[in-house]
Image (cartoon, rainbow, N blue to C red):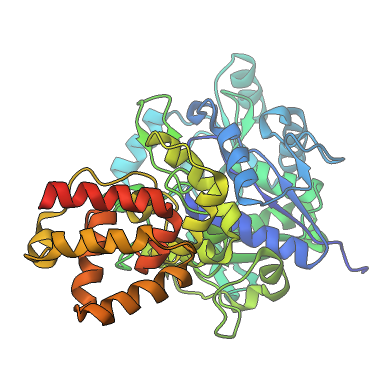
Length: 505
């Protein structure tokens, strides 16, 4: 059999915001597709119309656009295997439901919700399967005429898959190895509902993967229990030769490691679990997103890639191209990955350092504007270059470096108490005189003159510099003093010193 071209898919349901676990699944599919020169399909699984949320599909697409995960075909991308939205494929599924019914692999069941509830009350851990189907109202217990009459009368029904009991189902998983599950633990899953003339996830998924020639199904661990059913469905259709290879990814766990990561964990510990901010149209609730929280998309990608996978070396910082080269499903862990959100912050810090100052300056401009600051771009670039090493988010630059753009109007009490001595006012007045006489106001130019003056006067360097910092910054923070005065320029430096002396005396 010829080697098939790699085709993988990401198939979300438009039921709300995209969870960060879903983003990781899409990322792993993307890396796998690119590495094997394959295709990544974007499919929308919207057969459950009751759970549809307006705006969810657009939100999902916008998230991937921001993150740089590109699809090759699918909803909004086009392709030869469409339609890619399941609600537009009804007629296709009906045909395959009929194939299963004709071949005795599925049957029609008329049990009402009330009848099913009565059975559950009567039998502990009731399961609709080989041991109970003979006592229910279905096409296996009713005559052909009765079935036809009920359908003609408009009675609602479902089509169930007929699982043969006590059969070992072997699943070859690229991450977990050989998984064997006995068919007796499976129930006769509903594949189709006459009420909305739509299939359930199980049937739609298998038919789509087959018709779209999907070669690998890389999905979350939570889908592992449905894998044996999917294998049995492939067999029931006679599609064993084209069955995709499965890979079930480890769960994303709470930061403490006990249980699955949820939105509540993010709310509790103050980190986003969605890629973009989400406005729930039903409740009006707004949930934070990585983009709006100030994360760089490259940092989010790098952080997510290492949750449940490692490159086999100590490398932590990897561009998308490096991830594509290094990614290997066999290096995914079987056990869940703790969501270390603090590591996410660390990655963001690293990527801010890696980016050119001009790029960070562009991101900082809107924040300056929010604070009513209009500054020359080259000044912003210079300040960013000096200060970006101190921040994990671009917005933190305002707290760290706002003093470069706005003169202090008050002076931090603790710093004043500690740094403003009896002779500080006199000393600063003298220093202002010295600075005003400097022709070359570069960092080096200032430093030489001021240091010579301190030595000549026999002043204490620390006392002079601490008081100097207080006059320019308003507190005891910031980079090297002559870096600050150089950026501020002579005129602004002297004005700030004069004002501080007047206020602090």
